[in-house]
Length: 249
Length: 353
Image (cartoon, each protein chain N blue to C red):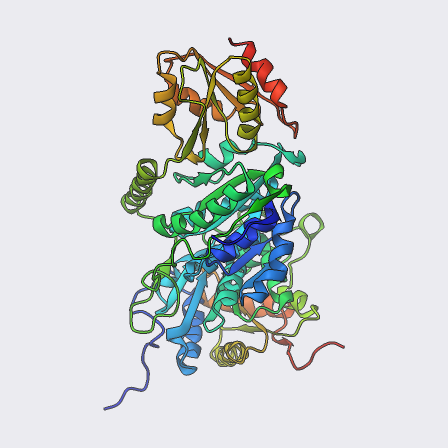
């Protein structure tokens, strides 16, 4: 008998607190697999955000710091600058990164900090119970947009990957999804690539992962996957938005 | 001790941090202390350290948070509005029990205020600033040499208590040039931190630096632990200086930092006129020197106590707490960047005698 599938060493043997149908668990696993495959666990420090994944350190089996809301990139900057031998990643949601933390992510990317950000975009504030996020889709109903997001009043969803890709500083910026198995395979490749760029001390690396929130979207897990495919992917195109070797002149 | 050199306060503070074994500085420019950053932008690369100009005080203080969590000596300098922005991180850093040194070269507030000397951040430094039950250990130098000495001490205290420490000065301390001597050796080697710092989990279980305690019992216990730490500071870290307290003086001044220097001149001038005034100068603002001030105020020849500040009356509340009604407690101060002259202080004293 031999093992064909097991828990990555970079994950603890804990049940997660995530809701049924939430894709945080898949994304956690992909990050953990990447850390294991590159042999980085013993020199990795993760930074947890404020939001649904604040307790990520209960699930990852490596050193972790829990940041103030939106400040994970500043934490990662501090750690990586004083201990460049460590591998540092932030794991942030869209409220954390795209709203309260825009300044920190923008400037970290612009300085070319050599850490990796996993940006989980589920178009809603999850932990506080389903409020509008900067990434909430036009006309999407949330508890603070009860008649749907009115873009004339609050603007359009922010495309963070595209925004970061405009920066002159070399970076790896990709957007992936995990709602179908073949997307999961692509997401894993992007996450691996992001960590490889960091290990090579090449550039800032950023992977945006489109994620579902059945609870706050008011949908079943399957409906949520369909909704993501039909509504989010057309607005948030998947793919590599910036490569360090494809620098602007 | 090394040889005496003439240095501007801000630059001396930067050099003192390096001599204290701190090779990591994250900051955002703000008058009247930007010279610390300018000095360290040159100096940190020379000693193989890290200088980083952050995009804001919010970012700078969270870079400190991350770096301190990774187990290195780290510090920043800023001024009042910047410290307000850092106060979020200061609360978290205290909660996470990390050693970080903050320098606040206070400007006059509130709001943007002005850039001239003030002591209007006393409440912010000693009573909170950030949210929650935590205490900063706050030290107030009254000369450039004392600023150097206290910066070096601050790193030792930060490591000892695993708590943020604040050095509070003003534009006079930051901008004035005075002769200073640097200690040749570290006040203390940074202790071993790999047991709690995120340096990679090789050979041990993962370390988590966090401040979230969702279980009320665990959160209460954490607060009790922080309170016990503050109590240890109160028991062990009171610092202050008595001036002209040997004889039968009639009035006790309480004053710190730049203001205390002016008070000393006023006391000397009054002494020549046969009027004896004593002064207690708190060097630690938290822990406040409650017992020494109470002891002085209760001496039979003391008729009253006068708190002299570059504010509209902040420390005076702690002076009242120390004196406990045993003597009348008065206040004299100016704010906005005005510094009373010795004559101003003398007049305020004469009104009470």
